Image (cartoon, rainbow, N blue to C red):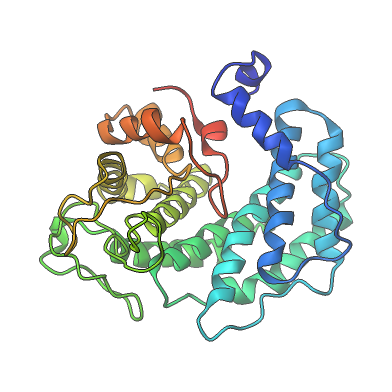
Length: 335
């Protein structure tokens, strides 16, 4: 990535420029409460990445400033919510703050006491909302799992890491269907399937979800599935870097989901999976690069639909938001 950025090659150069626009200093002197913390989390990770790619310590200092403010702030809390939104917010923010802190571990200017204070902040403020598994739709639990693994690595907390792996092993088969599961999808309490009319490999629990206006037709059309799949693949990537091969253990499930969701989003149809075969989501996220990088670039598999998705949509115009963060920059190695 450093070589591509230095050579000003597209698409890396353009994505890097967008990342630098986010990598500004935070003006907060205490940690914002709840969803308002998203902006700090994005800035922390953006600054950490820009520092890593450029060796410019000005960005390192901005990143650790945010982390230090959060570590010393008495306001870091996700509270409680009868609908479980606080659990999702902790996952969203933790999935960015955890990697930011882990990247900054390599910066000599981050004092050991400040680093330890950040670890303590994660444990005190994030653990309670992450260790309580959401019984809402599966995208929430997968986002929590993503954050748990990222923070566990920074905190060197094997117990948290193992708990997240156990959650992953339980949640993924209840979120992504394979025909080998039988005629009824696996279901976990509180997260029922949205009445698919046709079961197929790679179908997600939320494929047929209704509500919202993500395709101008008042239906989900793969919007939340993109968040969930990104969280699942990010979790697998963290585990892979720690020597745990979730990618391999769940290859058929993850590849099928990447391929089916890519087909749905590029064709504009949900492939007959739902009662009304409405157009798929107009919201396109930077979800597919990391999974494609692993299965295609590392494992030499053909993911035809995912390749088309990347070429025609993701690398043309896609969003990096919440737990989905600049995957084209960090994991794109060509097609």
